[in-house]
Figure: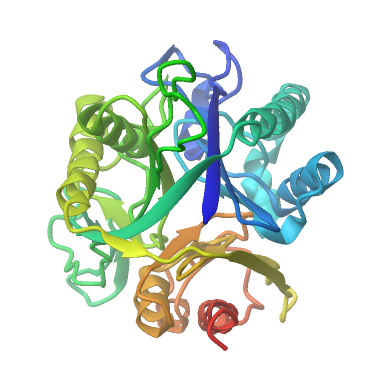
Length: 417
């Protein structure tokens, strides 16, 4: 039997704070926020069996680098004795959170705006130090009182967006970041409408009297949506977790007290929400509530999952060509269930291929985890060009996305091999 523990902490920066990450357009006016639409959270789930412990950590930010997250995982090992392999830190990729790094340096382009990031370097370092301390403190709380739990799996379905790589009237590839930008574009690329959901239900422990020892935690709902968190657009000056925050709120409010929802980002490097790049906060509620209600609708169809033991694996997919960026890969096996993680913005095709080849039907795919290597397009996309085929990175392995899915499938097969 597994035991779980959970804790969360606010990581919303004070105003005016750091500029918002995600759109270089904001740097025209230095990019700092003018208000808070909704708070940003750090959430920690501890999962233990009789001999080991895993940590799944979700963070409402846009980007955290490979180097920084490796430092955090090493600090977790030094503080709690939990190996780096057993820790997955999933970053939501909201485009309405504070800057934490210069992504253009990470992917080798964009010198023109690097000076903007440099202006806020000291404040960014202070925020990252605060975040590191908050992660360690929150882990301590999460693992302080583990409770027995059983696991369930279900799959929600909701088509909430479109593949933003289309074809113009001349047949050339165009990027469509909102539906009204390019009304004549043909948008027929693949979209992942599945929302994998892992549910951890707390089991009553007869050793404790619920009256004398009340428990706040009843269940964890972990879900993955393959949709870019860009409902709020480049003209927005509000801090927000974007639709993931609204989705979590919808799940928690409807399942009642004791429910905690955790979001991970699916393979959505080429997918936009139907309501994208908005200034109207109502759009966040609409897309987020739709995702949350899809999870709630599928909740009744949950299937029990055997979770007698847990184990983990991780590796780094090394750079094969000069302009490649190493990709962090991890798998958390939780009995028959698994969470496969990649530290990059994978194209939708990765989800379709991974879930089709995964040995367990109870598999969840989380990208932007344990690092950030920029976009991982398909080989076809490299030939077509477009925004995601990052300028300045010309000497790359065009089959890197396939290599990521192949490596993750091999790691998933370790459980059944």
